[in-house]
Image 1 (cartoon, rainbow, N blue to C red):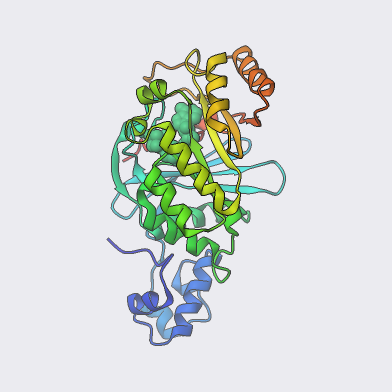
Image 2: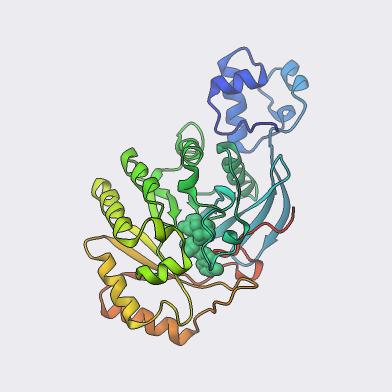
Length: 334
Ligand code: SAH
Ligand code: SF4
C-alpha cells in the first residue's frame, strides 16, 4: 500500500521520494497543495526527477461523482480498494465546505445512522483524509471550511485527524484557520478531553440527538459508557478554554425526541453551556424503522425551543436526493 505524501513532513517526503534537498520536497509539497499531483507536471522539479517519478502522487481516486443543487458527493477508492465518501457543500454564495470522513465505517453503531451499519473497517491515514479535501478542491472552487461529519467518529482516530488538521491549518499548506474547522463527535468523552488539552480554537459539534439518558442509551451505544452527565462535564471544560460556542446536532426522529419533555431536558442539559442546537430532520435510511418528522412536528418542537430561549437553527437537508446528507454516507461500491 503506497503511502500518501499529503500530511507528510518535508523530511518524510525527501526520504520517500529519494530527493536530496529539502527545497525539492518543498516544490513537491507546494504542487500537491495546489492539486498538481503528477510529478511530470511539477515543472520546477529537475527533468531527471520528473522522469524518475513518472506517476501520480494521489493514492486514492474518485470512482463516482454525484451532484445536486448545492452538494457534490464523491465516492473515493483508497489504495487498498476500500471506498469512502466525502461531500462538498455550498451556501449558494462563496462559501464551500468540505465534509470529510475520518474512518471507513464507524464502530459506534448509532441506530439511526447508515455509516453505523457498516461497523468499523479501518481508520484513515492523515494523507487519506487530506486527499478527500484535494479531490473536492479539484472540482474547481476554493474550499474555506472543513467539517468532520462524513463517515466515522473522528475522535476515535484522534492522532490521524489531528495530523490532517495540522496540515489543513499550516499557512504553508492549506492555510485554513482552526476556527473554520469543526470536529463532530457522538460524545466520545476521552477524545473531547484530549482536544480540550490541545487548546486550539477548533470548533466542536456533538451529535446529541436526545438529552434523555434512557432514550440515548437505546439508540447511541456510546451513551452507555459516557452518559450525559459526563458528556456535559467534558463540554463545559472544553468551553472554558476558548469560550467557543458548541453545536449540538439534534437529529429529529418522529415521535421519539420531539416532545415538550424532550425540549425541557435539552434546556437542562444546556444550562451553563454556550451552545447552538442544530435541528436535523432525520434522513431516511433504507431498512430502518425511524421516520422523519413532518413539518408540523418540526415547527412544534422548534417553537418549544424558542419558548425556552434555546438558540437553534434548522438544517434543511442539502443533498438528500444523492444520499450525501448526514448519516446517509456508507460505501456501497466495494
Ligand atoms: N461520528 C460523528 C461524525 C459524523 S457526523 C458524529 O456522529 O458526530 C454525522 C451527523 O449526522 C451526526 O450529527 C449524526 O447525528 C447525523 N446523522 C446520522 N444519521 C443521520 C440521519 N439518518 N439523518 C440525519 N442526520 C443523521
Ligand atoms: Fe458513527 Fe456518527 Fe454515525 Fe454514530 S452518528 S454511527 S458516531 S458516524
